[in-house]
Length: 90
Image (tube, rainbow, N blue to C red; front, side):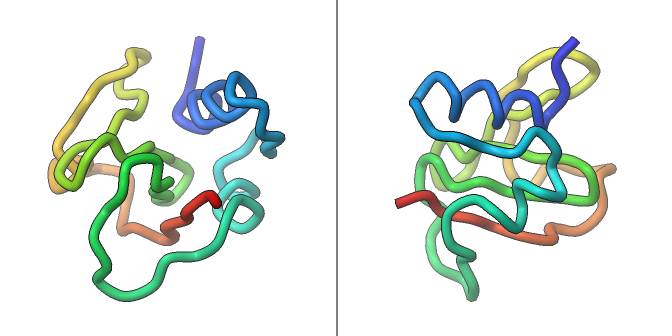
């Protein structure tokens, strides 16, 4: 099966970008931290408590929910706790 950190790991690996396998490590090691209320950009990485998502557009992201990769409104990604980090790759 694939979990949310595995989705980030796989997507970045396919793009030729090395990444840690676990969400907590990804949240500190990838790209640069985005602070404040700047617009969501395609490819931004969102990290919740032991969960990750990849921004598709300003309102939605893909993540793994119930074992399936789904596109969900960012505001509807619930049940994973608060957003703990937002990272942007160069």
